Length: 207
Image (tube, rainbow, N blue to C red; front, side):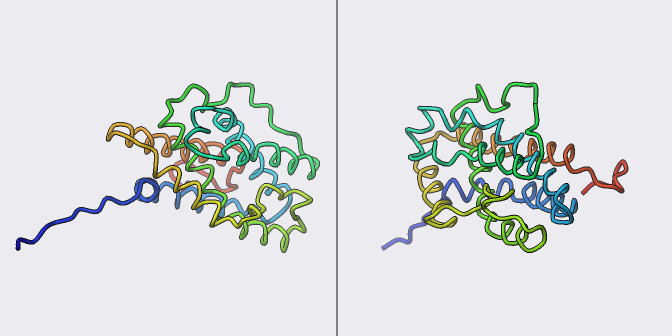
């Protein structure tokens, strides 16, 4: 009896994580470098960056094609909650003056953007706890978009990744999805740098 070699391909969600891990870690470090819990004004800058990104992806949550692949997609949208969080802090909702960036993307690039948006929910519970301890914010004031889903953030994430992993894709479409996720992370990074500039920023010193 001859031996056989079995090549196990990681699920798509794990491949996306591996492909974007460095970019994701750098973004997290950049946000923490801005000390978003130092004051409510700092936290408002974080909210504005969040709002601008979620405005970019708002059309995706209304897409019938995406909803057919990702059950319950429309219920995952957080743009309104972020807007209410800004209003609760007495902040204006940003007027971006440009069309949402994710509008008109291919189906597979859109999946990459949604992967980034949904993955950001996982750390929400920790951020909500810090916002409460340091700034007195909570689900009813300034931090509603960080609250976990009633079923739990981890379970909600697993439901999303299971649906994402089940989408049939060619190799080229897989690469489109990865490119979409990379574009989404780059977009968030740009918004963070605009809304949360570092005091000691100088050319060549940004993380």
